[in-house]
Image (cartoon, rainbow over all chains, first blue to last red; front, side, top):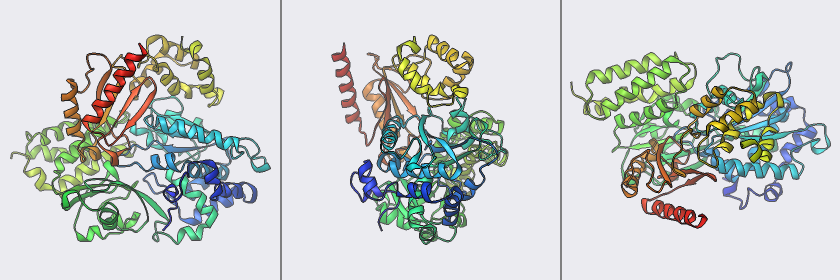
Length: 415
Length: 167
């Protein structure tokens, strides 16, 4: 099947404006602005079943429909703060298929009545931001951004904004704080961004991959899009495959493809012919899945992954083979979350500090069974009490690691 | 002074944000401020604060919060190796250890010639191309992927050479 998102893999030079245009580029944006009402665009996206690709899977069209129409101006922000360990899809989109992303963003802006959009990229994507700036300038030059687009009274400017190395800024309200020139710490919600967002104005925030889905939906129609994927997860997804596989990378597959297909057909199997011990389907934020044949044959969509005790999240599939010790895995993930906890809420700030100390001790082989119990206890106390999802996510691998792989902890500890 | 020296860039940065929300410009201005010396000095901090009508403490808190801003001098290039889980599953820890051995520095230390500071960082979104690192230097941030210790030493040699020629 030809790619829908990673079209640059089928068409050479797809990140050049004339090539993109020749292959149908900007037709969807033009159609939206010249022939559709904003609510019709939102309606089509709603009907397509598109769900947010940043991890939460929230229905995109529904989010757009929440925009407060009694408070202006409106803003749209593309979340390009791709920082979840194991996720590297948005970078490929922006580097190789930038116009489809920017066109999707532009359509989103039209749908919610925004005349200004920001692309918030993680600071490390310095080169990507410079590249996007060039592409935005080319679009302005060609009349796809700027004043009075396609002869209408609709105008749109897109700006890039670089973060500076903070995972928390992927959380949408922390991102907004950061974009406002503050420390990136999450806001208390509600109010949610569609009513109170950037500079206190109604704001829609979507992931890069989410926007990239929009032009083909408008071009080919919601029914076409819905016919791909599964009942609860329409369309295609870019799966970032990493860890102990022979061929890591991004793979665009319809929702419902199985873990086995991803790992064995696309990833060419496990390194050194070993077997899969565990899968983390949502990067470092995952609940660990104990792998058996049934798990490998599980369709990767939002509801099916739940039946094997995890969540699909942003579909960053990290493969752990049978040589990997789970106490080491959670030591790694907790080092990450301890570093990235923003410090605003107590459970996450203190909890991660203690979880780090405990996993350090356990992993070093100097911990006791009681330390493992205490670690589990700390993680459980954090659950449901943190201000944002980061704190909750930090506990996932810890709790499921200890519960589902007790033998890995037994052999590391003294009674 | 920052504003005079880079007046064109400053103007361009400020134009991205509504004038009544110019505080948004603090992050791009901080990148500009640390371009030359690799860290934000006291004077630049004051400059930015007065330009944006915020306090120096506000600026300092932002430098402290984000890992890519620095308030202390280090090597000309910060070599930031990712050792997060996906990279570690593909040999990043061993890579960093061997690199330390070859460079004769520990993580956090700078080579004697002041060229490279070796750092360990969190995920850089290049998990399929590990081992990898980024260099943060006067020309911004660059990714180096599918790295080996040999290739890294070659890169450092090339940086040394450029350094010599520029002197």
